[in-house]
Image (cartoon, rainbow over all chains, first blue to last red):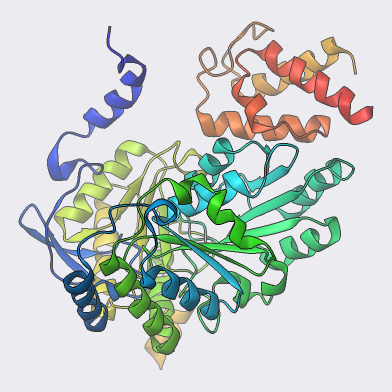
Length: 412
Length: 83
């Protein structure tokens, strides 16, 4: 009898994948060469599963700023902002983010996970209602569990279902907060935000959008899906992360609501944790500036996303419904998915394997995330390797018929 | 709606999800006995919510083990909606 007996089913699954680089859950990189290349077990791989959407992890200016910060301010803050004080950089980053999102208020958290945990457990309380998309990220569900609001779910990206659930709550007292994500991390699909915002207005609810995967990706200025769909005025809270398009770690929430700053002394995941170290603050500020100034990164990113999405779709593989930098291939059998993933790594492509029940629809996914830093040749290599393995494993059974646009391209 | 009617409809729904399992009753444990994974359970709960026009808060979902636990939650929420 062990205190860990309750995890026997998890241990069984975890151990069934073997050890080291053959186990998708224990991958360790020997080296990272660049934003798009690394080495696993002596094998050079293209990094196609890192959420490094703008490829800024090796941005020279961000590195310089981080080095300067660590040299002048030290390696860490060794305490929380409330108990031990903020550094000037914390406030400066909050002010940069507020300005970028054209909002009056911003709070920075030590991770993106903590941003959701903090906001959702604090801004709604007992007697309030949280209405979550059923495919919400774990950090949203966990924030909901940490707080005291009544939590209900609506069917994934289904505005009619959301409306129905809000209608049932019509006469219930308390605030109602709807939570949606700009881009959903598993399939790369985009929320129907315009419709959700209209329902929010009609039903008098609040709306929070998690732009973790869409900041720097969607919208003319990179402010995410709320900007892209023209509903920023309806979004009361935007949460996001620094660990994707900004290439570091941390999270934030921006808002225009009066009284927002009281959260600094009410929000436990903000108060009772160490604040971000100066080097992270410095590189994040620099990356945000680059994100803001360099629109080319976004167009390059979307070109790369199109190339991978269309390439895999044209092979006959089942990809997500929208073109976005998250490109996932759904398979039927977990065993086949594991073999497929191993063969991709062996062939020089690293991406993520997601297995049910951590996936929508109980199907295994090979999840790629595209970067603006990928070259068209790297994406092409990934598509070719996908094709080769798909035929070897019998996922695809015959050579695909040429698609109309390929014929047109060849004719041109 | 009578409790027996709610039970009947829920059992009919579960029988559709697991047509190979015989004798689903009030004491059947939804996860352990029917071997539904967490995604399948959540999908089933959404369909129950649609069927009875209710929303079951997540903390109450966590307390549901048997078919009858679900039946009682549906019955209580259904009455509350009508009240």
